[in-house]
Length: 247
Ligand SMILES: *Cc1c(COP(=O)(O)O)cnc(C)c1O
Image (cartoon, rainbow, N blue to C red; front, side, top):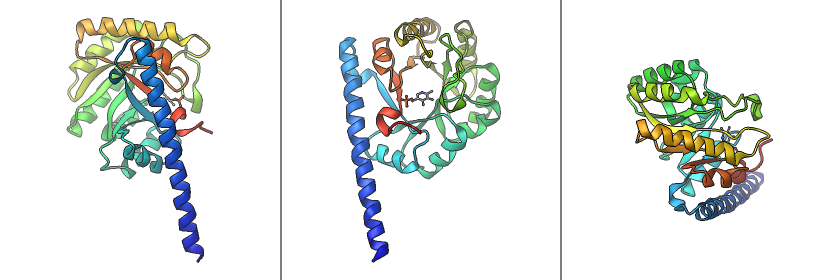
């Protein structure tokens, strides 16, 4: 019967997708471990965040079944319904994109981490929302490592200038409902990622002198995870190497 063979085709497609994600994930985990060993670091110091933007909630479910509970998204209008569709799986949502102040309340509802805090007004808005939802939201200061070229999806790279980091960090640490996690950056386009990530590491070490618990360094994507791990990244944000090239 037509219905049965369609179900069967769907099942085969989803088995194939699962196999592909599983294989890619194993390769990424091995790349992270190899980069860590090369830098004389323990691979367990580096956490993987799977970036699921443009991919469906069914892929998020596959990732959860494969043990990946940290997932990242960069647009609220896409992330909010995906988080709702996968509620109950124990996922931790990392918001990693440019965030408009008027979206802070929506993001604070499902996110556990916001990596892209780059201005004081956003700190205030996230704090109000976290308090309203009675939750602790971990915030990272996004640092502009020297280039404001637009990224994919027409989203600006964003980030605070390095000299603004202390003020933003202090504001997050003092804000009700917010925890200061550490720093995040995207490597500048058209420049070597290694030296940029080293600058981020220096800023992160400086931050720890005043905020010792702010230990997160969120750096590294599919194309530059090796350089990021070498420069001390604690969290890498990997999309295309796990889920495929976005169209
Ligand atoms: C899309 C995105 C990633 C993941 O990029 P890939 O190259 O697909 O691994 C990481 N960080 C941010 C901020 C992103 O927007």
